Every structure is written in structure tokens, then in C-alpha cells.
Image 1 (cartoon, rainbow, N blue to C red):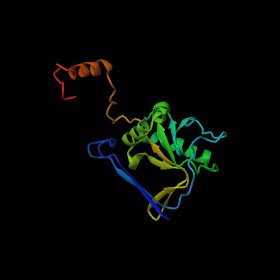
Image 2: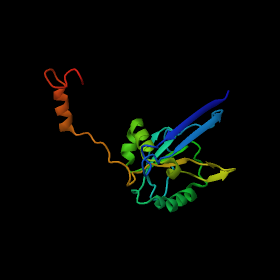
Image 3: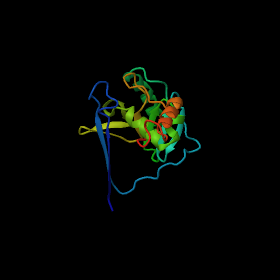
Image 4: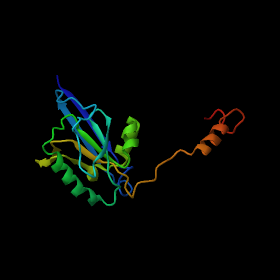
Amino acid sequence: MHFYTRTTIDTLDYSGSGLNSGSKVAVAVAGEKKRELWTELPADFSLPRPFNIFKMAMPGVLAVEIPQFIHEDDIADALGMLDDYVKDTDLTGLPLMVLCDNVGFTAQTINNLVWVTFTRSNPSHDIYGIRSFTEHKHWGCHGPLIINARKKPHHAPELVKDPPVEKLVDKMGEKGGSLYGVI
């Protein structure tokens, strides 16, 4: 039995540094099941600073809080250190690590994880991997895929609910209100 799964990340309108300047990536897998995803971390699991604040977001996915993004080059040295730290660690059950600004929010729900990961990362700039390599012009990694999903200076500000405004709009939707029957 062969399985085929393809995931496409298209961030063209979300995370590029200019209008229509994001990128796409497709992740394709095929074949028999190769691993059991971790649902919790092994008792002896650790990561070095600044990767030492982390939480399982879902099976096989670790959200990792690191310092805020300053410049796209700020991650290279830290990822080199992380790669060296885990090079002899069996991370088979952990195929994805998401670097984020707030691990509590990111790992709280699947919606938060998806929102943070795919609106704050530009695949051509923000995808890395443990023990990464390029073979015949194809990139890959022998450890977890890492997505740098921290807020970047060029991202739009977050949409945050405003309870007083929500109450006003809800009131307009009540019988006799200007939006009654519309909302």
C-alpha cells in the first residue's frame, strides 16, 4: 500500500516583503508509514538556548519560542548551534518544529498553529532543517523541518478583537437595529 500526501504552502499575499512577492513550497511524501509521531516529548529531551522554551502543538509538531525577529540573517548562527546540539539525537517522532514568538498561543489550538505558521513564514526565506542537504538541486533534511514563523517587520499588524466594538455591532444586529436580519 502506498500513500501520497502533498502539502502546499502559498504565502504570496501574506508574508512576502512586498506586494505579490511571497513564495510557495510543496512538500510531497509517498510510501509506507515511516514513524510514530511523538504526542509528548521524551523525559530527557532538551534544546539549547535560545530554543529552550517549547511545547508540543500537536503530534509530531513542536512549537519553539525564540527571541523576536530582527533581520533575516539573525537565525543562521542559532540554527547552526541547534543543528550541532541535536545531531546525535533521534528525532524521528518530531518531523516539524515551528519557531514562534509566543509558544503558549501557538501551541494552544490547531487554528493558532496553522495561522501563525502559514501567515508568518515565507517558504523561500523561512524554511530550514536539521542536517539539511542539497542533492541534485533538491533540498532536504535528515531531521525535523524547521519553519521560522516569527513576526517580521513587514507583516501587517495583528487583528485583535475589540470587545466594546463587538458589543455595538451585536446590538445593531438585534431586532430594531440597523443590521437586524443581516448579521
